[in-house]
Amino acid sequence: SCPEGDWRRRSCGRCKKVKETGNGAMCLESSAGSLSYLGCCVAKISGVEYWNESCMAFGRVGTTCSSALEHILQTMREAGPSLAWQAARPAGTNLKLSGEVLVDCSSDACNNITKDKVLDPRTRLPTDTPVCPVAESNKVGISCFEGPWEVTAVKDPYLECQAGQNRWNFCLNTKTFNGRPFIRCCTFLYLNALDRRECRFLGLPGGSCERYIGLLQANLSSNRYTKISQPLVLNSCEGDLCNNPLDPGLGCLDKVVKAPAATLRDRLNAPP
Image 1 (cartoon, rainbow, N blue to C red):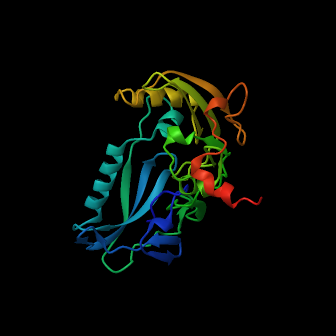
Image 2: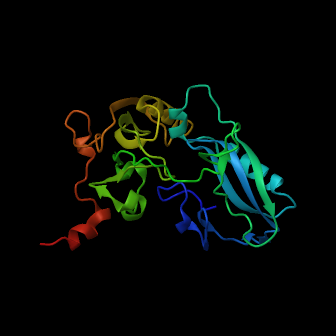
Image 3: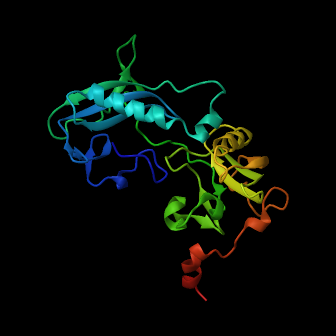
C-alpha cells in the first residue's frame, strides 16, 4: 500500500514505483532491503487510530502472510498512539490492534485491495460499507495556524506546510501530516526548558486542547532539554484560522516574524 504522509491517508508520491489498480494506486515493490519477496499479502487491520479499520497490501519474505502481519502489528504496537489520538480518546481506553489476512498469493502484483462491500447478514446484499476502507477522509478540516517554525522545527515551509500554504512564520494546515482533518485549533503558552516564555499553535483532529497540552508536557518531561512547565491554553476554537497569533488577547504577538528568512524568495519575486 502507499504509505501515509503529505497530509494524506495514502501518499503514493512516496513510492518508488506505482501501479494503478481498480481500487486506486499502490506501491509496486519486489523486495524489502536485500530480501526478495516470496509472496504478496493483503490484511485488514482493526483498532487503527482515527480510522479504526484499514486494509494494507504488503510483501512477505517468509513462508506466510500471517507471520508478516504479526510483525507489522507488533511494530505498530511498539510505536504507540500519537499525542493527538491520546487527546481524542477517552481516558483509560487502549487501542486493541488486530489483523486478518485476506490474501496470501505468490504471483506478481496479485494482492490488489478489494473494492467489495460488506454484505448485509440478513439479506446477503452489499451494503455501503467497504470491506477494505482505504479512502481519504471526506471532511475538509478547518484551517489552523501551526507554528511558529522556531518551535515546530520547520525548515522549508514550501515542503513542510500543507500545499506550501503559510503566513508569517506559521503553516496554514487543515489536516495532520497523515491526513486526519482538524476539528479544533489551539494556542498554548508555557515555559520551555530554559524557563523562557514559548508559544505553540496547532490543529487537532479530535479531543481537547487542554488534554493535548497535558499529554505533551508529560511526554517532554523525561528530557531536561525538552521539558516544559506551567502550560496554559490561551485559545481553543473551531473556526478557520481562529488561533491567529496576532489576536491581541489570545495570541502571541511577539512570536510573529512577518518577514521570515524561509520565505525570502516570495518577497524577492513579488511585483514591485
